[in-house]
Amino acid sequence: MGSPDIIPIGAGDLPRVADLAYRIWPEAFAGILPAERIPGMLAEIYALETLAADIAVRDHHYWLARRDGADVGFASAYCAEGRVWIKKLYLLAEARGLGLGKALIAAARVQLGPELPVALYVNDGNAPAIAFYRSQGFEIERRVPVRMGPYDFTDYVMLKRA
Image (cartoon, rainbow, N blue to C red; front, side, top):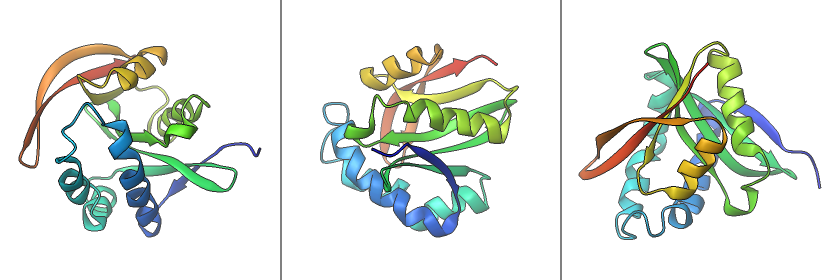
């Protein structure tokens, strides 16, 4: 097996991100989000024009995780409020537990501010993600209501100090 790679990407590679999201979300959010909500959320969040605006308007940076020549995950992040914010971090099920999530977080820190704390939002019912972030040194800072399109959720803001 080849070694994993984390590569920064631009707008031209965003279809790869959308493809991964459509493959990852139904499994990752099974039992967390109602199955009937997932297609609409994917269509809204991962529309190519939305992803492109992340880069062009919201100054987000994107990375792909690759293993054995195949895309297996992605992350996006930006700086605000003196923090590196991880906006998206998703891996295919078969790519979890290989250090790729940790490597994606590290890539964001290196590019956006190794001296800054890192923060993210995670659904308060997503026990596997919360456990992963805790294993990486994140702590729950607060619980917040979130509106995504027509949907309401409760998320945790998790923080890893610098």
